[in-house]
Length: 259
View 1 (tube, one colour):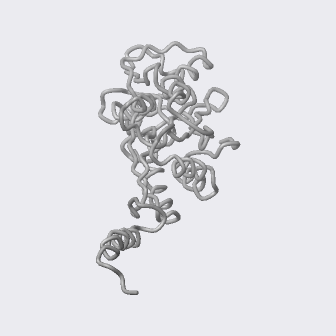
View 2: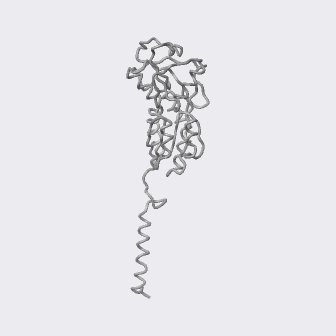
View 3: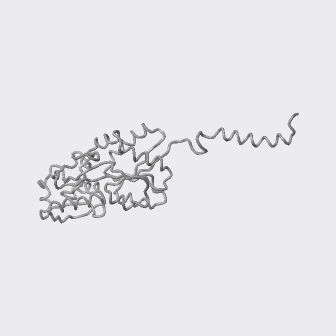
């Protein structure tokens, strides 16, 4: 028996709904575009993460990484913002622990670093080691006591039994290096990885291994972030051989190894 006009009117909405469903991307009704992860990271990771972003995107075409760099404390403080990001990577565990309420999942150590004495090119003040930093009139710059490089610096000086009268405290190792490169300081303690991108703009004097520190870089996914699964996967990837080769390329040591 042929359909009545009433039946045709009832079927039309159903047909329209079916067409809409068929037009939606597979998997769900959302966007089929790539996921973009915002990674808040210590500034000392700038160069290494720049290359890692490319490598990760090639291996995971459905994920894009957007990095924001700064002092570890500054990045940790960002987690209280309305849109904090997806992953946090700091230059010490203390900064990570201070942000614990905003994080989820494991917090693996993904890289190690250590300190060196950054000097103006050519070392015009003839600084040969930590002891020379106590000389009167020497302009020494260090990290503030509330940031990782500052905490590490104070550990090194305590191990050496030295009292250094610094002229300023900075928010990050890169800020310390900038003061030295600009001629505003004679010396400053920074990460050894900071000297690689500085090139000829700065020189350095090594710190003996028995007085140096092991700077640990933990990573964690942000709690309640929009892409927790992808964020956790990226944190895990940072411990893979592919990621560790890139860390090593930029002067970082792998966890479990010594320099």
